[in-house]
Length: 476
Image (cartoon, rainbow, N blue to C red; front, side, top):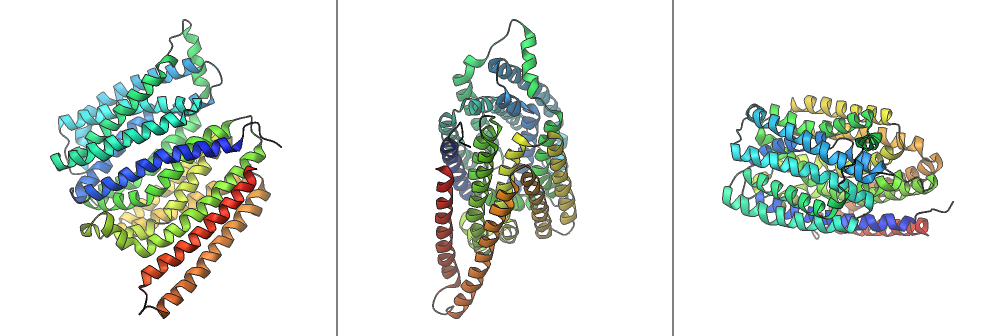
C-alpha cells in the first residue's frame, strides 16, 4: 500500500530535530568537562535532587497536554488555550506549596536552599511548564525548524555561556539554577512570541471541553510512573548513600545518556505524531519500527563495547582524575545507551497504538523494577546498584519489545529484526574474540586499546553503511 504522507519527510524531520539535540549534547559535554573541574561531586548530587523537584512539578503541570494537543483535530486554538491556563494555574499553586516545603525536603538530603535559590527554581518551573505546552503545539504544526533554532540558541546561551560563568562566579550548585532559569525563560519567550495568535478565549466556554477529549487517566498514570522510574534511583542513592555518591552516580548516568538524548528524543518528537497519523498504512509504520531498531542496534552496541574498554580514559578526559570512581559505574551502565533509546522509540509507538490501560501497567512494572533494583543495590554500594538498575532496564525493554511485536507484523519483527539483531550480536562476539586474540599476540608492538579502537571503528563503519543500504530500500 502506498503511503499518503511520504516517509522521507519523517526522516528529514528526525534529522532536523537531531541537529538541535546534537547541539544540546555537545554544549552539555563541554559544560561537564568544565564544571567537573570547578565543582565537587556533592554539588552535582545537590543538582540531581533539585532537578527531580523541577521535573516533578513540570511533569505534573503538563500531564496529558502533549497527548491532547497532538491528538486534537479541531478547535486547536481552544485546546491550546485550555492547557496554557490549566498549566499556569497548577504551577502557581504548586510553586507556592514548594516554596514552603523545599527547605524540609532538601534538609532530608543534607543541604539547605536559600530563598533566592528557591525563587530561581520556582521561576524555572513556571516558565518551563508553559514552554512545554508551546512545544507540543509546535510539534503539532510541524515547526521542527523553529524548534531546532530555539534549542540551539537556548542551549548555547544557557548551558554554554551562563552555566560556566555562573560556576566561576558562585563556585557552587547555584550556577545550575541560573542556567536552568535562563533556558526555561528563553524557550517560553520565543515560543509564545510565535504562537500567541493561537491563544483564544471562546465566547462559549463549552468549547474548552474539546481539550479534555485527549485526557486519559491511564495515560496520565503511565506518565507519572515513567517520571518516577527515571528519577527514583537518584532519590534512593541520595537518601541512602549521600549526595557525594549521588554525584558520582548521576555523572556516570549522564555520560551514558548523552548519545541517547540526540537520537531518542528526536525519534520521540518526530515519530509520535507520525505514528498517530491515521493517514498512514500500518505496514508503513512497521517498516519504520524495523529500520529504527536496526539502526539503534548498529549504532549503540559497538559504542557500549568501546565504553567498557575505554571507561577510565573517558572519565579522566572528560571529568578529571578526581572522578575515577565513575569508571566502573560507567562500564556497567554502558548498555543503557541502547536499551533506553530503543525503549523510548518503542514507547512512542505504544503511545500512538497501544491500549492506554496496558501502557499504564507496563510503566508501573518499570517503576516497580527500578524501585526494587535501587533499594536492593543501594544496600551493597554504587557498583551493585548500577548492575541491578541495568538489569531492571533490560527486563523493561524486553516487555516493551514483546508488546510492540504483538501490535506489529510478527513476520517483520521476528522474521526481520530478531535475525538482523542476532547476526549483528554474533558478529560482534566473533570479531571481539578475534580482536583480543590479535591484540595479545601483538601487545608488545601495538598498544591494546589503540588496536581495539581501530578494529571496532572499522566494523562500526561497515555495519552503519549496510544499514543505510537497508533504509534506502524501504524509502523508495
